[in-house]
Image: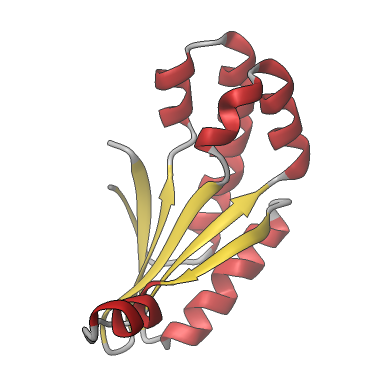
Length: 135
């Protein structure tokens, strides 16, 4: 598994996106990047797809610890979070599991950072409500 998700029902895409950003903020994460996949697919390919955003979430103290341990770990940062519409008023919010980093780097200092990040992201995921599952 590479992540975990929650499915929100009865909420609009924009409301789910805002709620996700607030949940991340409550756990010390800021959003460094926001990729609008729907707009990119329309612009680049002329294809209509449902709303889909990729958020690059960063907790600065945790990122700093990881970068101090392994300077090139920036290749694995920030933590990606997706918000995607699967049907009207049904939104999936997915979080990349920071433990993926540990499998690639295998350094104890990185494991501690990944553990802390995972706990925070799982709390953010749970705070959104909905059904949490593995991705």
